[in-house]
Image (cartoon, rainbow, N blue to C red; front, side):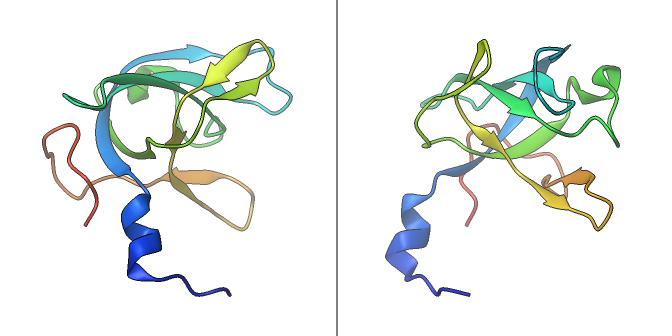
Length: 112
């Protein structure tokens, strides 16, 4: 594993946001949802394609807080532009468990 310095870590904008909209993404090559996430003042609302369909239902995502990388450049995924990376942990079976704050916090706070 390549080590990074503290300055490298500080450049990554890992921020908390609340999912305000979740939709199916049938055009994706792998099963995915389209999320709209409110990252609060300063960062605003961003969209992301997420491959979390094995463990999460669309109706369970709205209102949930997530941790996302908000300073990646936009990425074209089929007909959709993903503006952030919602983080999670891959399990052995390939499913993804979302990385979330342990308790509610203000949208936009940066991971320390």
